[in-house]
Length: 392
Image (cartoon, rainbow, N blue to C red; front, top):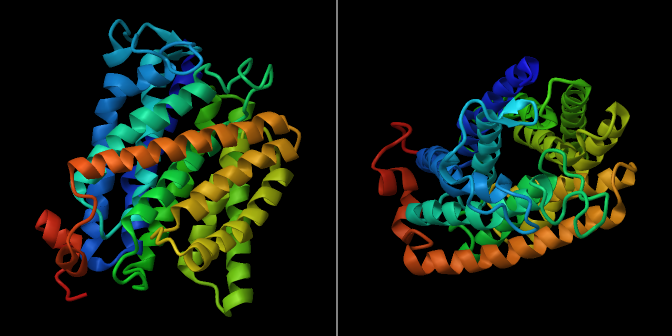
């Protein structure tokens, strides 16, 4: 065990959990109507708790339990036989387990943004549970756990380069979000503005800070690669924030706070797969393009495809993660075959498995709430609580 590495990853683990609770909860919560904000908080908190238990039971073993091409097996289910003395590299394996658990929490939590204000709470819990075990954990194994997309896998000696989750986290969550939103259908009133842009900004700021643990910690050591990953993460976020606001100003005549911070998230998602492989100048390029590319993707999904991906999960996270994965090859840090092949394999599996899971879960528990609950807001109708004593 290396003490410095261990201390660093302990901090990074806390930072990544901080991204979901409270960062993502506040970011998404501010974007919905005041009468549904608690339902978003409920989704984020419940998923965090449920994924933690499932990661212990099965998820960690499926992702990191062995070197089989397709899944890790069940040899590490419930961490049986693993104690504080077991190592994963230079880290205690229980710490590696916990760090990876925070990724397994935030990935299904990202999907929340696609279905806010109209989905059944039981469906959220059942779908998120099965999706993490069937989609996220196997994909994590394929790329990070020695599976078929890693070095020496189906794409040869140089496998897929995904430093912190452009494919494993953002592509999978983005595709799943689009499919859930398409199956659900649009909100009855999808043109309601965010009830609290200030809350959105606070959540985005927390995500920006937490992302240092997300990308920096993926080096799994306190070293120069981690330092560079943190640096390029910050620069990409900054560049994307500026280009999003500038493009918004050019197209619509004003730059909004919600737009500015959405650009931040686009820059963070886009640099994620490349953060361990590129330098500051490449990060500026990635971020600058992402701020415009993801904004155009938002407009395309809304206006051309006409899918009510409510909080733009696919356009920001999915497109951002895919774009960043391709940029790894553009800058020569990975092979074109592996990067594009990895995107295709994971995209196909995610699409098929997600669609099947949606249908299975919808047959067990209602997919969508009734019209009255949707109009009146999920806070009171589903959870019996109000966020505010205001008629809004």
